[in-house]
Image 1 (tube, rainbow, N blue to C red):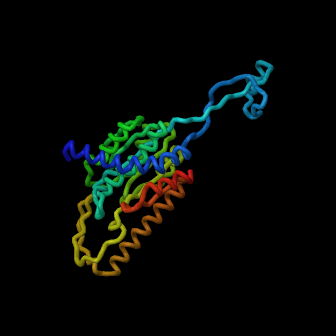
Image 2: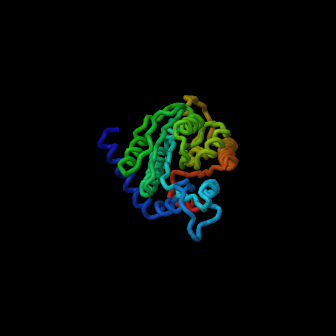
Image 3: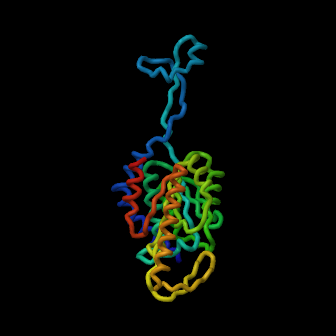
Length: 287
């Protein structure tokens, strides 16, 4: 992709997402994440009306007059967006490839955070972490994140979500908002989800094409796995074969939902034809 094509694609995504974000997501994001806790600021003499539970008993005993701890809200947040760049994400049968749809979701999340003066970072991963964009603020930074997603080399290898989460937790110590975007076609260790969700606020987003869940009747077809290189012939006219495949995918989704729920993390299952902004709005509202 040439530079002018990249700039054009990034601009298109910005135009599509900015209006949608400003109209709905930004306000709901601010309401959901306007403060994530309280941190100690200072100690001052007690004033009428102060809560008794704020009294600093050690200083009160030392100076023989009451002092209270002043707490302030922790305002600045960091958002980390983890994007799967295994080859199955470079695929789509509708108007968009999964990676383009993911870039739009990342843009909406990023502009929401930027409007709240929060930092946003990016991790691109497949079988390992391939690129890290450190968290920063501002619109130009969000545009660079969009560009990184759409211009990435999508790797023909199974993705390893565990490695991405492990890397993030090792590098980014502060509690963050973590959005994990993948088609979750490959196996992972559910224990890592539990570890990550204890340290960070985690939302897994399965981005899928409708053909990921159901294969149409097209007769005998050679099916090719872009991540492993494996090829198999299948009789897609066999209703039982199509049913078995579809049921297997449904069970995989049920397992995903259960793993995230058991990890106290959130999960969204998003078709590339869905209105992701409405789903994110509802997620923020629940927060």
